[in-house]
Length: 152
Ligand SMILES: [Zn+2]
Ligand SMILES: [Zn+2]
Image (cartoon, rainbow, N blue to C red; front, side, top):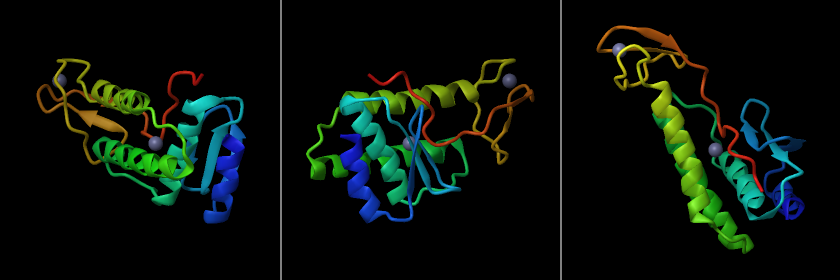
């Protein structure tokens, strides 16, 4: 199915490149969709549709972890639409799991390692500082579509 999906979108989105990789993600800087060519089945189809949705919606940048989550939600909404059009089954539980992975990850990053309080992210995407105890800690910059659990 991955090949059929790719074919359909090569026409619709001629500026987007597809490159095989060991996971699925969208790289806005190079307008490239990386996909795991070894993965199969519905989850793989949905993962590819999700990345195509980021590309279609022209997702390029985000200012905070919160807006990243919003982009993820938007990309899944678009992926559901495309799945309907292509007759691909939509596994809502899987989509919720993916979004939860992001939410959990965000919650962990924003928790102060010193006092345990949750903080909002600051303007700098790579550093938090605690409003309660004033500790500072570094986080890796977030990116679209972190690798999820192994896709079966
Ligand atoms: Zn603190
Ligand atoms: Zn995504």
